[in-house]
Length: 185
Image 1 (cartoon, one colour):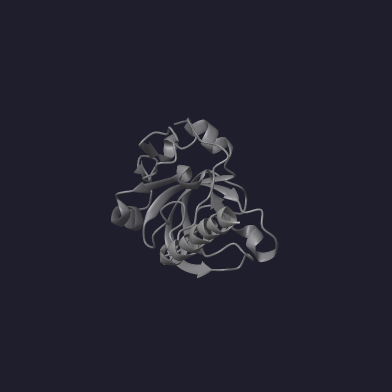
Image 2: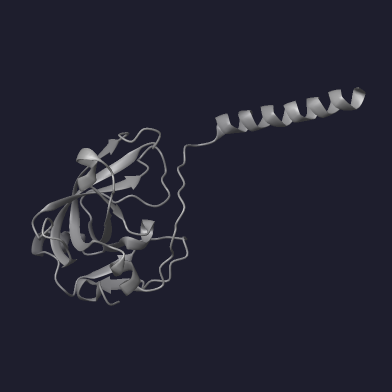
């Protein structure tokens, strides 16, 4: 009887400790990756759209039940390396990323005013959300130009350099790409 009470007390103490620690933690969202990329052609193959564009506006949404917060970035398409008929240069796409300014997502969020080379996959969601895109491979499909002011004023050219977004997810992709290299690496 004494052993049962001691065991029950120990289990109860562990549960209470876990609950207390949960209350002290910061908000953070995590995701898992199905595939890690070791080549640009593989990343491009898994993407429906590969484009350069500038984030024009952002908003936070909680529009998927149980999905948490998402950041929706409206990206003005500057140039395309691979596209469908709905997303030529001058059009916009909405890129959906898990997380927000207040809830850290699995990777860094796109930033308003910055120009990116993006590898995108349709969201697969229903209704109005079906037109949105996810970044292919989480952070694998995000390259940022350091020439943001120049990219906005003169536009992205085939030779504009984009640098891989910081990531520790394990992809083996080039540190830099240009739009002309976006499909072949």
